[in-house]
Image (tube, rainbow, N blue to C red; front, top):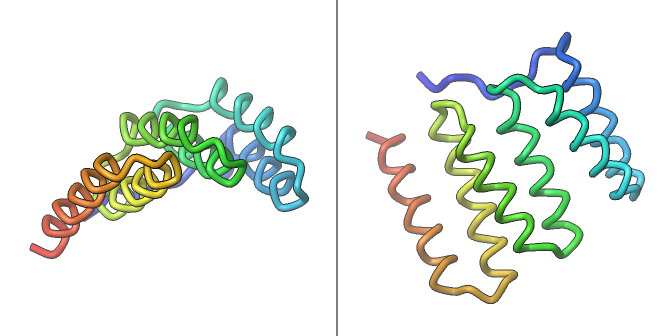
Length: 122
């Protein structure tokens, strides 16, 4: 069974993550980025992966695909043992590589998605 990917509601990082999501929804990407940076500094090791993913999604939305890919790679580094979640991160890496004009890198990410999905389905 996959380990859940969550941040406890009583964690200091949780409140900052919620504020960052709200700022992003309001188009305040710079504020969202600052909040995510603060959240990462106060997070526990198992929470960092979630925050890096959120940061990567923010950077991807801003058109900073190379920076986004770096954030997604950090999310993978700290990723819990949840293959479904890892598939989602690899899909985001694929998108960021496509936006960078890196078709071979995108293909490698797509292949990793297939490998992980095969492990989930078996």
